[in-house]
Structure formats: structure tokens, C-alpha cells
Amino acid sequence: MNTTRLRFLTAGESHGPSLTGILEGMPAGLRLEAATIDRDLARRQQGFGAGGRMKLERDHARITAGVMAGLTTGGPIAFSIDNLDHAAWADRDIEPMTIPRPGHADLTGAIKYGYHDLRLSLERASARETAVRTAIGAICRALLAEFGITIGGYVTSLGIVHIPAEDPPADPAVFSDRFARAETSDVRCYDPTIAARMHEAITATVKSRDTLGGILEVAALHVPPGLGSHVHWDRRLNARLTAAVASIHAVKGTEIGHGFLSTQRPGTQAHDALHFAGSTIRSNTNRAGGIEGGISNGAPIVVRAALKPIATTLSPQASIDLATGAASPTNYERSDFCQVPRAVPIAEAMVAFVLADALLEKLGGDS
Image 1: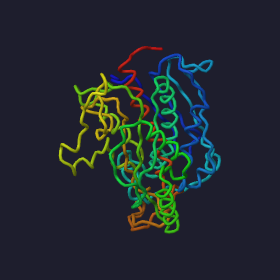
Image 2: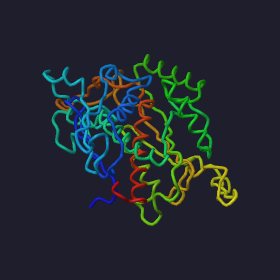
Image 3: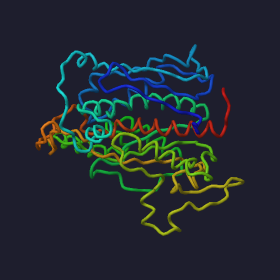
Image 4: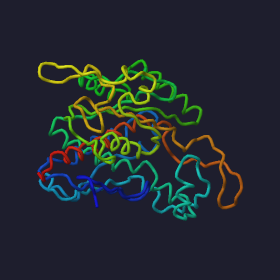
């Protein structure tokens, strides 16, 4: 039995003809056009360090169900995104892939499903699937916008280059300014000085035929207090957000608010003291990242994600040819050198999905 108001499915392979998405549970009467989705799809394809495929694809969502005359009907919303690169692969005779890449799903997928050709793992495990998630998030953003909720994100570190750690701001205006500045940067960093160093780090990584990971931050502004719950483990908003963000390819760690930084502080300096501002309860800090006891508290919700370097590298890594049992270096499969700037809209999308679901859980209603 489904326990959420919203749920979605994705289908398709990296080099198949298209990707498909279905979102169920969206209320009727929400204005939605393909252009709304395409804006976020375009953002996902932008970022310094992207691989060659981004020069080929121009993602477009073709809505096939759940929307009539520009309004959602209340039924499942379905759409497809064509893979423009499919034509270059459709008629090629491709030899089976038998050398797994360390850190990818090549080997584990083959063990689980009994594949003899590792490309069957590669095709579905590819981050190409996140195009659908980005589209789903764009639809959820449209719902959240009706309630004044906005979501944005930016990169805080690439490799050893990073913005100094700090507590999340309590003022939504600070985040709005960061969002705007980050969107003018090809590494999606709001600090121009740090962004320049990140640019240099990616350039050095490309020259060394390697890959680079990093950390991104997503914030949701004007989220009302009371979303989520403390009464069951799977209703806690922080748990739902971290699970959703951790499901993104290459994400190896997540945190809410100042998260791991709080372990370095005593309790009196790790939480958000309260005071009255007129008749309203306020806090001057946001160390909790907008969530206390699994419930939103009205402050900006802040989620961070750590992404490992992509497993596909131009420089071969030691592996084994499963067909012969002999030691063999990996073969290169086209990929990004640094995916972190492109991952920001994907993380935003997963946050949007969880918050839209929690909002509908709170408010109910079919329209």
C-alpha cells in the first residue's frame, strides 16, 4: 500500500529511444506546460566539466497524459524525453562489455540480475535517468510555487576547493541572492573567487584524465511549519529528504542544517535559541536547517549532498575481464569529468518532490 500522496516511476535506458516518467497524485487544476519542465531540463545540462553528450542532447518533455488545456486533470501525469543520441547507437553492432568499472553498478548489477553483458547494468544505472527526475521536480515546483515556496541550490565545494563552513542563514533573502548568483556561474558557485578556483580545479582534472567530486547545497524557502511528523520513522521530513537526495547517482552522504559540523560543538552552541518577536516565536540562527523533530519549523530547509567523483575515468583503472578471468584495465565510457554543477537541479528536484508530497499530506484535497 502506498503511504505517500505523490509517487513517480521512471523507465528507459541511457541509449534507448526515450525516457519515460509518470507522476501520480498531483491535484487537478495546476497550470502546467512543457516549457515549465524544459527550463529545468536545460539547467541540468549546463555546467563546466560536463561530458560530450551534453553537446548532443537538447532535452524536451513531451506530455502525453494528465494535462489538458494546460491544466492538470488529477490523473497520472505522463511524459517522455527523447534520447537524441539513440540514432547513433541503434544500428551499431556493439561487443559485450565484460570489464566492470570500480565504483559503478557494472559488477553488482551483473551479480544481482545474472547479466553476461555489463551494458545492461550501465544502461539503466546511468545518470541519464535523472533527466526524468528533474522533470518530475519541475512539476512539483509548480505546485509549491502556488504556496510561495521556492527551491534553489549551488555548489559549495569541488575537491579541496570549498566555501568556508558556516551555519545556514535564517534569512531567506540571503539564499535568494545565492541562488541568483550561482545561476550566473558555470560551476554553480555563488562566490566568484571560489568559483574561479573551482574552474581551475576542473580544468586540472580534465588535463589529468580524471574525475572530481564535491558538495552541493539545496535550500527551500518559505516552507510552512508543520510538514512531516515525529510520530513515525518514515514520516520524519529529514529522513524523507535525505533518503530522496541520497538516491541520486554518486551521492555518498547527506546532511540537514549544519549536520556534521554540530558534532564539533557543545549543545548550547548547536541549536537555535528562541525568542518572541511581537507575538511570533523566532530564532536568529538556523543550525537545525529548518527541521526539528522531523517537522519543518518555518525556517529555510537546508539539505547538503556529497557526490563522489564519477567512476568512469579516461585514465584506466585496474579491473578484471569477467569473460577471461584475466586482470584488465577498464575501457572508457563517455561521461562527465565533474558532474556536481549539473547535479544541483537534480537535487533540487528531489527536494521539491518530497516537500510537495509533505504539503499534500498536510493539506489534502484533489484540486
